[in-house]
Length: 48
View (spheres, one colour):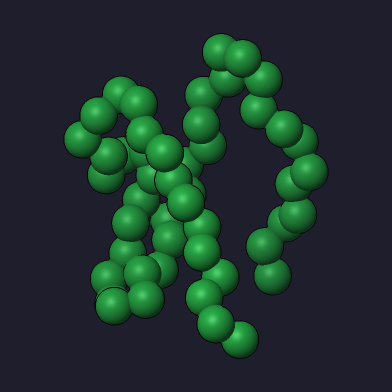
């Protein structure tokens, strides 16, 4: 089980590295796989 972290990022903090499994297969590592310095990441839980 992953460790729960409840700390918020503050102005100037570096985004932590995350590896996400994609619904269509494969994975995405943030922020390494982003092509831009700035990005918006949307987490959508889908239909339950």
